Image (cartoon, rainbow, N blue to C red; front, side, top):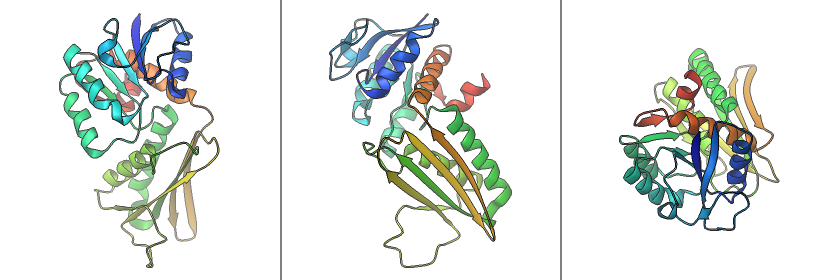
Length: 251
């Protein structure tokens, strides 16, 4: 039995993670971490990792980038594996995550959906086949409460494509101030915010007289919760290192 602590336990994703775990027989929620400590289930909720009543086997973090330092300090001092599933991290914070992975198991990806990670692989394949013959644009849509833009998933898609093309591209996030023709070296990034859209991502390859669009749409947040719980159970059997969905799928 894997004992899991949920950071951001009272948020929408934290509650989704709890709902997924409740239906499984191989793991359980032993505690939650949240500034709001009103418990809604049969586990205690504390305000900081240092207040956890017992060391969990793994922590799933769906909180906020502001919580990262405290979480990493706790995990490094106790040797606790962590699944980092929040978004909006700065380059400096990502560097801290990678440094922590040298000492403990860390699962870090911009999107916990299996379908999104398949989309990444398909986009890389398309880029390798189409090369510089097609212009590449990425459009992402999310609910009106999402703070960061473009989404971490859009950045993950762009980075994967760019690596496939030898890092020859640069990203353009805003065209209204650019009074010039599109450059071949661009990957356009576009963010839409509205309503309750869970998450939609389109990767558009536009060539002469033809357009190829690769798309993924999430109908509910549970797809991300399922991926995070699978990652948590997987991570408890791993040594120190940085893991993502590629290792989970291959396991």
